[in-house]
Length: 205
Image 1 (cartoon, rainbow, N blue to C red):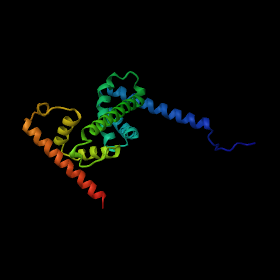
Image 2: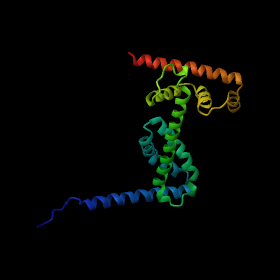
Image 3: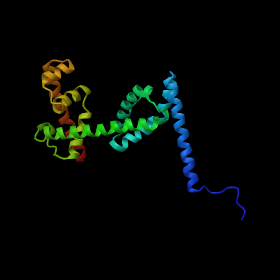
Image 4: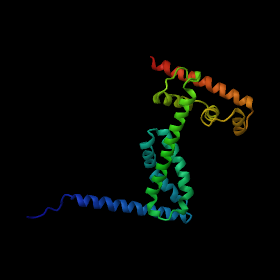
C-alpha cells in the first residue's frame, strides 16, 4: 500500500516535537542567562518579556487575586535578579523562576490567613466593623475595604491591629508623634466605617 506524502503525526511524534520545543526554549533561556551573567543587561529585559505574564498567571492560580499576583511577581523579579548571577544551571531558569513565584504565592496565602485570623480576633466585637458578621466572606470584605484607605491609614491599622504595636511604637516606626498616630487611627476607623456602610448600602439596592 502506497503511503501518502502527508502522514498524520503519531502520539509519539507529537510528544517528541513538544519535547524538542521545550529543550529549545530552555536552551534559549540559558543563553540569555549566560549573556546577563556576562554583563549584557539587555538580555534581562528579554527574559522579563518572555516570563512576566506566565509568572503572573502562575501566581494567580494560587491567589485568585490579580493585583496580589502582580505584586508577588514584581517582588519575585527582585529576588530573581538578585540571584541570577549565581544560577548554576542557566537552562533551568524557567522552572527556577516559577519555584520562586510559587514560594512567594504560598507565603502570601499564609500571610492573608494570618491577617484574617487576627482580624477576626480584633474585630469580632468591635464597633469598627459596624455589624460585620464573623465569617470568611465578611472578613474578606473588610480587608478589601482597608485597601481603599490612604496608604498612611492602612499602615497605622496594620501596625495597631495586626502587628499589635503600641501607639508609641507606631509613632517610632513612622517617625510621627503619638498624637498624630491617634489621629490617623481615628480617621482610619471612621473612613473604614463609611466605606463598609456605603458598600452595604449599594448592595441593598
